[in-house]
Length: 271
Image (cartoon, rainbow, N blue to C red; front, side, top):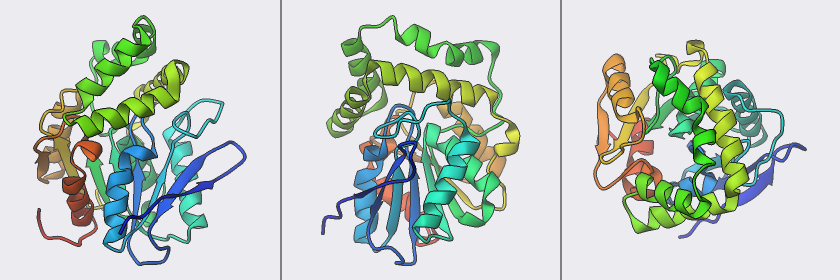
């Protein structure tokens, strides 16, 4: 059975989200994408979960995909948005899943609305409070200035090849970047990386929320690999290494990621 996503518009600011499966089915997964991506990155996983009886909510976060909100970007505001969206959909508890930048959004949601999050899946991300060197901070704050020097076609090709291991994932990410466009990519990178650098450690995911951590075996993006290893060690949990996946695990390995969502929801003992 193929579950098509249904688009909804959250507010007058132009925030769009999609639902998959049957509302009120008892199990809900909230799916949050990474930087310069969109809900489409999670769609293969959402469809698989819907086939298994889950209800999934996936959005285009501000400055991404079909969502265009002016006035900057903050993780606390994203948490407020998602809390309101879940309320609209009648969801009182969910397994909150973040990929890359989406891990920050899910951490903020867990910190600010802990009653909404029964479990969390963090993929290829970084915990709030992770120490960044001065060079790493500078690189994030000036990423857009560096990226704008590159020809757009070259940037898209290198971003897709550097983040993805499979042709399907590279094709998907290429389409997302081309849909966002050069100007949109630069705006999202500027505002979102500034939010990363300025975010307080108080937005970290509460330890009371069970967390499952995963990373693509070939993820070489920035500080992700050491940050995920440190995060797993700090929490005392296994870091699930996903073979055949790069940074974009959700599109490189949707079957494995679906299993991790189920694990975070307590539906599986192991994978």
